[in-house]
Image (cartoon, rainbow, N blue to C red):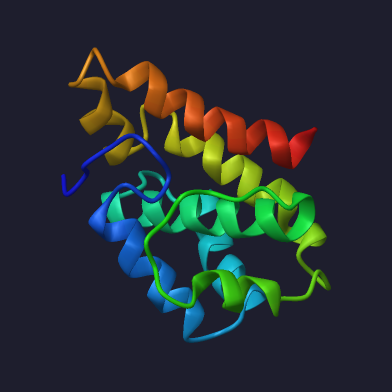
Length: 133
């Protein structure tokens, strides 16, 4: 696991996905992550895709900012529209719940770290709460 912290963007994979998202528009990136809600098991990269999509959605819909070190990301986010994003909220929320389940490689990896797992899980639950609040 290329993580250096428990935050949403404290992982190499999530940072790489921010750059991938910035090559398109938020709606397209979120739609791609939406497809993971029906997977039997979420692989590591798929989990991060859902988390990044959910954090982008949270910013667009609620203005929630997450710490990151990605050049140009804030500017890109500020140019994203809300149209169509709200319609994907339930699917992304369902996918986030799956990230926290037994059908998630990322959850399995974080469970191995008993000390930090509650904080990591709480960060994901916070995004979920923001999307459904």
